[in-house]
Image (cartoon, rainbow, N blue to C red; front, top):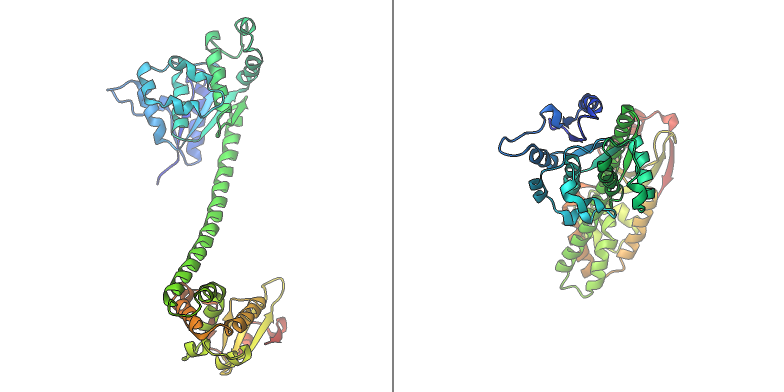
Length: 383
């Protein structure tokens, strides 16, 4: 089973304890940690270890960055050839760090590679370093002051600028610019659990939304296909505009009626019967709404046949009323256009799969006596 590969990027000497605790934490969550100090990275004997670390980053799904007091080893010059620094420069409004390419540490280069590859980075900074970063930002425009400051959180004074400008680059990216201060390991663990859980929830929500939008797009595409079919089928009809409009307007009505049993379906659909006469021709004697217990289900609609059997409807009474009105309007269209609209609808395979009513070959009264306690039902007759 594939596991999420999480690259842990940080200096090792000062953050060794945190790294050693993060490893079992990541494994316990079911993911695969990728850490240079645990032989998770292939160190190709034909290349430098820095090159191996950089090449491993694109193979991971996300990166956890920890910034502490140490700068770490400076990346070898040949590694810089693998970066698109123009692109990286456009990713942050504070990219002064990139002016010192030859001073970048291997940890910083790992994160720049992740940014270049659009790999999510979860960044954490020691809260003492974070505090000193604020001091640096307030005074960096005063060379005589900034050069005299000893930042307690930074192990080597001459590396402070590069660590703080690294933080600037991260926090001023156009996206994925969050950075979280921490004082203890649990701060990192709690943040990661919360962030990953919320991300998973967001992805599920977006997937549901995407599914809904896909269905809407499919429905729209089907309507276009309907229109195309009608246009092709009705070239010989006198009023092409009415035909095209009718393909969309009367689609649900014709799908509903075509789901009812009738050997002479097309003849009925091209008739001038009133709605009541049409239902009679389909052997429908009554449309009955059954009010169910309000705490259990919404009302159900049934079409009773003269042979005692019935149809169960997916439509509500208000939709049936809309269909009745559509039928009245449909009969006003000339017969040639009506025939073209009917042909296009009856050829729609999707409308045949998703029928709005389905026949139950049982007596209606016996069916309900058997399935539901009679005292819980209130039968309201409709037409």
